[in-house]
Each structure stands twice: as C-alpha cells, then as structure tokens.
Image (cartoon, rainbow, N blue to C red; front, side, top):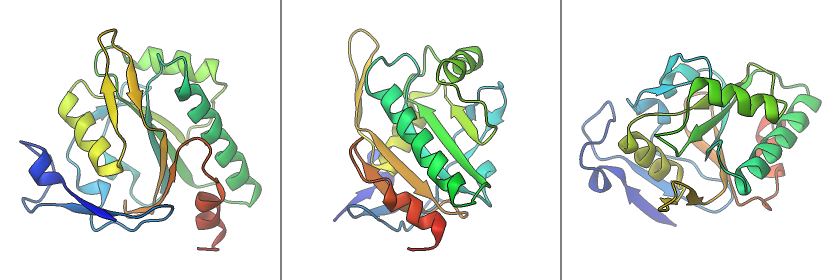
Length: 194
C-alpha cells in the first residue's frame, strides 16, 4: 500500500477544502479517505453540458479514463464496461452511472463523443463521457484514480486501463487494474456480496 499526497503533487489542487487529501490504495478493493465529489474541476459531457463529479452523488458510478481517438486498448476498455453493465443489469440493479473521462484535452468534443457512442453501440443515458480543456483537471483526476498516462509526440496516450467503482458518496470502493482483471470485484459490490 502506498499513499498519494494529492496536495503535494499538484501546484493548484481544485479540491473544495484546503487540507492535503490522501488516497490509500490496495490491490483489488480499496476504500478512500476522500471523495471524488470534493473535486471542483469542471468537465463537459457528450451533450455539451457542464458536469462536476458531485453531480453523480446518490448513485454508484463506474469510472475509467480513456480517449475516443484511441485505436488500441480504449475500445477494449469500453467493451469491458459494457460487459460489467450487462452483468449488473442481469442481477436487477439499474440505477448507476458509467463515466468515461478522456485524457485528451484538445480533440474531444460533444459531437465526437456522440460519434464514438454510436460506433460502440452505447445508447443508455447512464453512460457519461467527460472531457476538460484543462490538462490540470485531467492530471488531478488521474492521480486520485491511480491511473497513469503519458502523451506522446503524435497526441496519442499510453495509459493504464483501470476501472474504478465509486459508492453513492463518491468514495472509491473497488478497482480493476488492467483489462484481464476479474469483473466480479465490481459486480459483487452491486449484488451485496462485498
């Protein structure tokens, strides 16, 4: 286990309190000392609406970071999210969010998100695609979610493929690390096993 001190890593953190925020990370399942709802960063979604993470309060949210111009792991991550969604729906749970946040601060647009959703056959309103024009917001969120990324000279991104479950209060309660990770870790949180 290691601790990320967000306040020390960011010159201007956009948390609603001034205290240093730490997140404890354990493999598989983790409980966080903070909530994503404390983030003050502003994003736009596939409908062009302004969104903050506190807007997801009251529902469990499955969150990942990817980008729609990716030709490699991001479509696989979306397919994994669709598989998780099907399994959660199969156990009768319907009221949750799936949130994909883009690394790409330059190319993402609402219409681009909509095109990607059509290509990936995503039609349900529980899906939210978010982007920011501010690289600091993306970096801050990636640190909080324990997702590493690096932009290359061609504007593409190398990144980890983590899928995170937030509870209704925005706390991180489970994390899948990599595309081969067992979805059961997240499904069990919906079925009441964990």
